[in-house]
Amino acid sequence: MDSIVVTGGTPLSGDIPIAGAKNACLTLMPATLLTDAPLTLTNAPRLSDIATMTTLLRSLGTEITSMQEGRVLTLSSHALDNHVADYDIVRKMRASILVLGPMLARDGHATVSLPGGCAIGARPVDLHLTALEALGAKLELRDGYVHATAPGGLRGGKVTFPLVSVGATENVLMAATLAKGTTVIENAAREPEIVDLARCLRRMGARIDGEATGTITVEGVDRLDGATHPVVADRIELGTYMLAPAICGGEVTCLGGDIGLIGAFCEKLDAAGIFVEQTDRGVHVARRNGRVRAMDVETRPFPGFPTDLQAQIMALLCTADGTSTLHETIFENRFMHAPELARMGARIEVHGGTATVRGVERLKGAPVMATDLRASVSLILAGLAAEGETLVNRVYHLDRGYEHVEQKLGAVGARIERVSGT
Ligand code: UD1
Image 1 (tube, protein in one colour):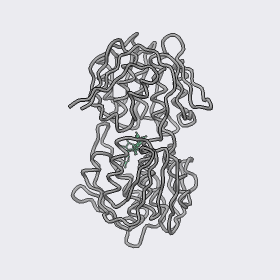
Image 2 (cartoon, helix red, strand yellow):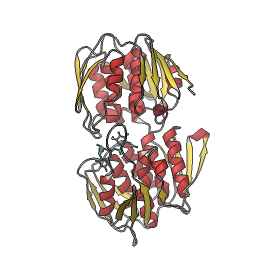
Image 3 (cartoon, rainbow, N blue to C red):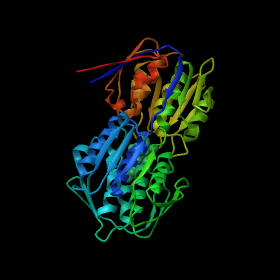
Image 4 (cartoon, rainbow, N blue to C red):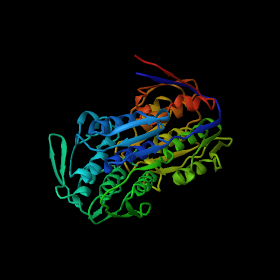
């Protein structure tokens, strides 16, 4: 298993390119199941989660060709010869559930393994299922699988989500494009990845309105066509790399970044005393002199502060001047990075969904364990600022969502290297 070694204390300078969004790509890829014509995605990120989705779609009968070293993916689903998403793939990646809606809408039946729990919480899929039922799906849970049928095809319906779910909104949005009649999705997620999915589906001929408003209306069509669509830039990768100079000093431009995708996060950086500016090339970030200011952060669905940047901003606040509070409102168990940061000298107390961080002058390098994707990168960020060497173990989590983190940070002057394990 590979590890990453970071030696802290070097200010950063230069450019970091921002890739296409993992979470957008993971929902755009299953959209291939809605059409027998080819769907080409450009600006795809090269990540192990994308490889897992490729394996899953191929297991259903989708042909996938990859060009420009994986940046361009063409997916063709002429005919599906398997309608079962197997547990062995689904358990590796929860986003696998996103094949359910499109497969059901296209062929009237689909069987998908239930994903099970994950490190950051129980993460049920009940909202995906009740939303598809509102479109006429008949569901049966048996042997750990959802067996879904819609013999006469799906029909439009009204879906009102009791809480905002990105994945459930994506699943039902895709299904509704081929349902007969009108679907209205209320309390829908508004994340940029949803907006990107709606744009792509419209290019394929879908009739969708209101995707950025929280109420999405879909007029079902008989068939969708192929399309070529560029994956939106990854706002979480952007926020993560913006934090690198914020934590250890220096100036970095995140190439291709758009602060419009992470307004709430940028407000927090501003409050901390970090300089952020949108330029023609991307987002320019510089750390001013002195310690950053402590603050309160609460995670919320978009346009609020993203839960996927909570671990990373905690790394920044560990050395803030004063006491900060982080409220995690999306997932119930998303502070596993806190005890690891404490190994580096951070002073953090966690009570339920609230973490209190008392800023210290300096962190100290230590061996630490990555527990999930965003937790892993928060430990790397903390290592950039720490005195001495930080060894981050279990970095396979990191490879799910960050392309060559050691190369991107190394190119702006960070002392970071990957150590191959056995
Ligand atoms: C997506 C993102 C993930 C991000 C999360 C919240 C992908 C591949 N992943 O995950 O990186 O952290 O949005 O922004 O895009 N819930 C239910 N029942 C359901 C579905 C969700 O109770 O059927 C709950 C979840 O447990 C969680 C909350 O709703 O507490 C939000 O989850 P959701 O938005 O669905 O997250 P994902 O789509 O799984």
